[in-house]
Image (cartoon, rainbow, N blue to C red; front, side):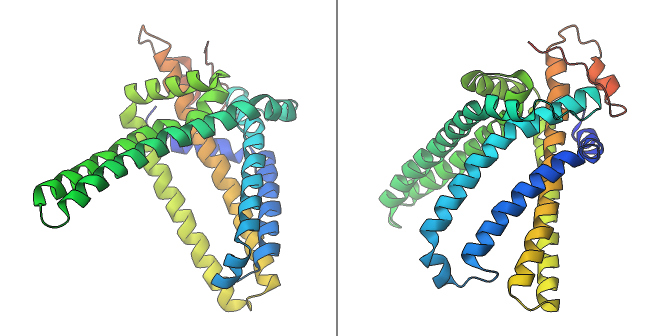
Amino acid sequence: MNAIESVKKGFEAAKNLVPLMVVVGIFNLVSGGIMLAILGAAPSPEKIADVSAGVGVVLFLVSLCWIFLEGGVFSAMVSTIKTGEFDSENFISDCASFFLRLLGLSLLSILIAGGILLFGLFISGIFLSIGGGNNPFFGVIGMIFMFITIILFFLVLMPLAFGQYMMIIKDGKIVATIKDSFAVFKKYWGRIVLMLALLMLIFIGLILALNLISWILGKLIPVGLIFGIINVVFRSSVNAFGTIFIGCTMLIMLLSLITNQDNPDNSKPQVEKKLESFGDIDTEIE
């Protein structure tokens, strides 16, 4: 399956997951409402500075709550993609089952990607400081090292970005999930990079559209509580669809690639056949 097909199938799958969109939308609405209550509709820089500690605590708690929900949301996506029917029976148990593993995966991913970036920038900064405008050679070395660091950072970040989906698909442990993610990325990096690029373009388009609509609303409605509520509701709804659509796209692509990887005889896997129309997907994953 190529990147464009996975995006199309992701959109088709998302249309069958309205209940999940409602769950994610309510989560976004509650978290957005809390931020609106703290900051207001149009906070000034002084206001943001005054409540920055409280905002940090809220964002931390919201992140923990979302990681808890991810297990149930993504498990329901996988189940729906495989069977064609939405089943919420195990939603809460899946949330609890994956919470600590997804939390550990998130922390380890941040540590790996952040460590590479900080180390590379530190070394390049040393070379740039030694150059100091007086020694072009060290300045060039520093710039080259910075460029290599940024490239390496993104190459590491991409497989880490779909680690959460890989964990749900394989019900894996933290380290095993990271290994599986890098193995799949190494073998199918072209399709994955193209898929991520397409999703990034779609995401940027959504952000621009949201900002444009918010700007128009700001011109039509006086900035205040009513404007803030409308803005939060609208953004929560669009973000909910985006979350489910992107998740379905990633999962469908990974299910297809993993099935290909698990069929060394190169015979056409059934996942490819069944994805021709959204429905059952047979993935024999150990």
